[in-house]
Length: 383
Image (cartoon, rainbow, N blue to C red):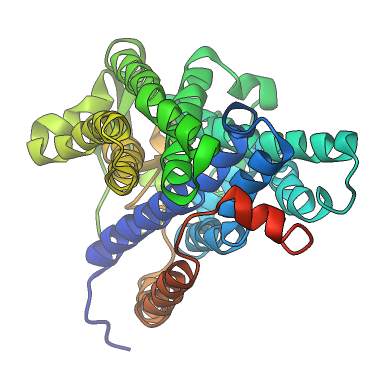
């Protein structure tokens, strides 16, 4: 079968697609997670909590499709990365899974009984279901930037030799977790300011006017740590962009501040961190000027920039190894076959527009603000 795109091009396309899917998850499901994490801050009465919950209740499960698409893309396009990541981050992913399960259970159960203690329990379950994944996703990125303890033997078997969850909870990993939590909580506040009214919207606006400063400070601190405190990875020999998927064919060197080299070689990549900071500051301005639609767009751009910064900083590395740097998994040597990538690309070009069109239609149907009056008038129909 003649394939019209060469192997290198297909690998780069799938790296871009994977990045867009993960960014799509951070933007779309990110405001769900952020809203849930902010529940005790923006809502003080049962009606106010129901206003916040009903702002995300009808859309959270559709938004989570982006996580499924991202995981599927890693599994199909980068199977070695998928296998290694699930070995290394198994306990962390299990923790995320448990937290994510609390969301649908909390949505469905909290309104089954009018008992205050019952509803408070499930409200806190929703908070955990929003805050824990937000932190863990950031912790995972922080550990990717530092490298993961695995090696590859002569038979290309992946051998993970880490010690588990607490190894992941290192200082830099936790800092990245806080960046993620602050970023998604800001995003959730921007969404609530846009989709709710009354006291919930006002408190969310105040959060969106202040919390992005925390995001920026933590993001800049993480950048300085990467520049002066973390060894980055660089391929010095042996990796062919269109070569076989064998991570043992290259030589890799470590150097302090190496993750910033891509910005020097391709200055236009600096748009990612700049967008992360500028979007957050635009959210602050929009919150103070009471322009929630602009604020949500600004917040989305900030999330895009912050997540993209991690990806472009590490390119072409996907999963660096601390035990065997030369066996680190990269865009050039950890992908599926050329035919697989091409067939998957055709399927993506067909079905991704369908997903986007359906998502757009759903949000158009569900447009408008959630008000306390609607909640009280539909006490037995809404969450």
